[in-house]
Length: 102
Image (tube, rainbow, N blue to C red; front, side, top):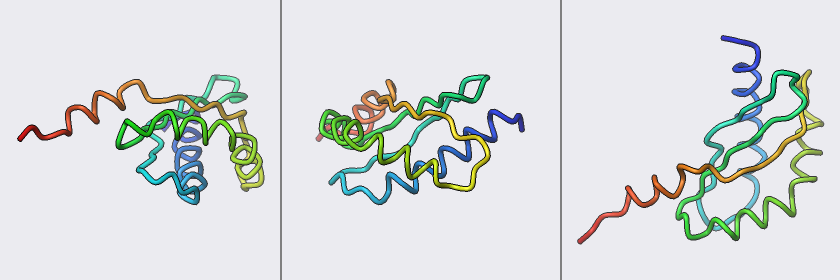
């Protein structure tokens, strides 16, 4: 496994643990992490179910971004890039496909 891929996996696991502690009243998952080659920035893609809660979750994560970064920086990980959070563009599509029409 490449170093960047390994770092992405580690970041995904650790951010998921941090996010898990926050009560969003919906399911929030880390769907993907992309770290730049310099390992200075990591884009964290989140999925929200139901997707209708996305704006609420985005605002909450935005207001907690500094706290999440601080908690992440305290972990015993050698490389600690700046975290940037984004909505996974596939999240709404997945939510729509999971609805059952009766």
